[in-house]
Image (tube, rainbow, N blue to C red):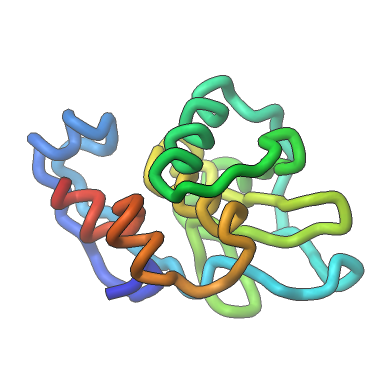
Length: 155
């Protein structure tokens, strides 16, 4: 099953504490195709998106994602954006909590503000940046890195 299906995921208190996520809350998972292959001149950020300096933990998460995937890329070529104070943001493909975009200078990752500190959401988009493609190849998102809601919560 892909990361891009609509579902509600019940996070157990045990899993939430282990992952540092939300405690016992139902998390709406509204992640449809989270990447864009549009030409750089056609890319537009979601309304309200603001560029942020990547928190130090993002570098750690990038290293973990490189390690599990077996792929490498220059972290400095990724620009990070947040849509502050939202669970989801609107896109042409529907509401999302995260999105990866190709740019003329590298890659951009956009995250809904309420998920900017959620390791799985941010790393999921980092994995798109590393594999440089849309879609969710099982070999990367499930088998190697466990970066889908189902595999993350099961771990």
